[in-house]
Length: 161
Image (cartoon, rainbow, N blue to C red; front, side, top):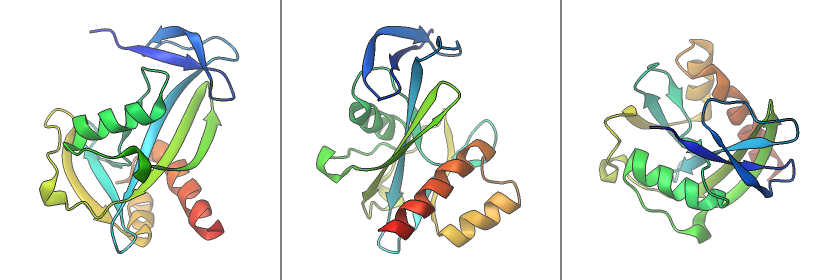
């Protein structure tokens, strides 16, 4: 099944164009990928263990409509079986890299992992981790390498708060 993704300009405005996932957008056009830092009371971050690579990742996915928040909600429902309210979703920042807009959000949720229903197709495991534990995972290569920039951005964000 071909997956069509919405394209955006550098300012995160949707443009009147879509692209098949896996293809490279033209110059000045961007694919958006949204990630959600789900935090518990201890400030730990929910990670998913990717079924294909066995590495741990921040939950998220590609944007196929012009509203990133809708996509975050859909992804969390698909991957974790949870429903999230718009007003709980807060912006962290957007990282621009190689025709990609990585848009990072967080929610203070306290959602118990026992109430989540991970997607059997995508997710091997789910667990909350502290930043120290995540640093160790990065060092021992059990954390997905292309997600490290998101953790760095999150650390910057909480240090500025």
